[in-house]
Amino acid sequence: MPLKLIRADITKLSCDAIVNAANSTLLGGGGVDGAIHKAAGRGLLLECMKLGGCKPGQAKITGGYNLPCKYVIHTVGPKWRGGTHGEKETLQSCYREALRLAEENGCGSVAFPLISAGVYGYPKAQAFRVAVDAITEYLLTGDLLVYLVIFDSAAYQISEKLYGEIAAYIDDCYVERHSDTPAQQYSRLYDGESFPLAPSAPDVPCAAANPADDTDMFCDALKTCAAKQPVELEEALRRLDESFSEMLLRKIDEKGISDAACYKKANIDRKLFSKIRSNRLYKPSKPTALAFAVALELPLAETGELLQKAGFALSHSSKFDIIVEYFIRRGVYDIFRINEALFAFDQNLLGG
Ligand code: APR
Picture 1 (cartoon, protein in one colour):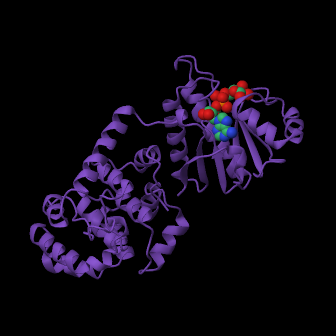
Picture 2 (picture 1 turned 90 degrees about the vertical axis):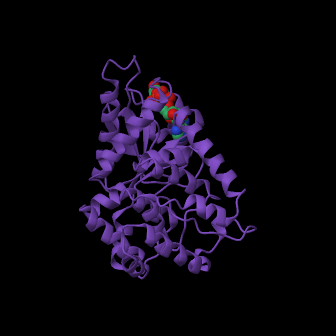
Picture 3 (picture 1 turned 90 degrees about the horizontal axis):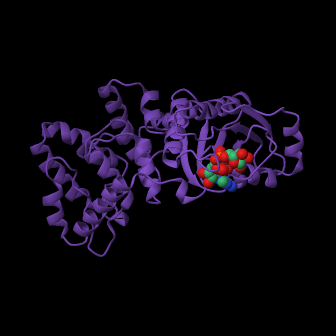
């Protein structure tokens, strides 16, 4: 997962480099700047004193000293003055320059705080959007593992409207999941668009159900499904033997996209994709399988088919599944938007 959202104190992270939201003197201050200097010790200040300051939008690198990381990359964000003084461009430059320095110094991983989202007053939601967009733009070609560190919950929230809609959708799914029999769920949920959920014994949470135990019922559902889908029954049954890896590669070909375009859009790193490509029987995790379904922009039925190849099924007993289903049903396939919502609901994120 090349971009991870995490809640942490950046001074505790042992990644190769952490980024400091500094001021132009580079001689320390409050907020994350103060925390980093305090944890790093006097050696950091002595090195910073030799740097001659830093302009907004620029970045300079030092050692990590007493911090668990190897480097500290100091960058100076814009002070918010209403958004009409080039603040966004300066903030974008902070992320670009810091990523460039991390790469030039052989880093494999780097952690960012939300630059300018504190003392400098950049509206948090906009600061977050600039950060995610700048980092994901870099990741189209770069190979760093990037952490975006959320230190306080106030520094991060998706829009209230979206949060409310997803919360209501979760409630609906939870209520329906726990008020109907599996057969009733099947009849309602299997509407020719959605994918039949793996049924489970009433007293076993669906997420714990072993979809393999439901294979017969699943195959019956698929036969029913095949009767309603444009795909011929023979083709549908042939695909039963197709592995996860084979279906993934087939869908990549059908979509006419490159492998790299697919795994980058899935927020999956190259190494993991190579493992999947080279082993037809590779079994990915559920977040990985779903990340590829999102990257391929599969409708719910095909998402379920791809999941089933990895031994999983979408379940209305899992908030994670329900949130991903919410976005797929609405044709929203931006994995970073979906991860922001998953993060807001304290769920795992999509990706390797
Ligand atoms: N770990 C991770 N993130 C943190 C930490 C921490 N230990 N401490 C604070 N943050 C977060 C804040 O919650 C905020 O979201 O870092 C983000 C940036 O906030 P600030 O540190 O206030 O930085 P900024 O808004 O860029 O202002 C920079 O403040 O500290 C001074 O010397 C600094 O003058 C400079 C100005």
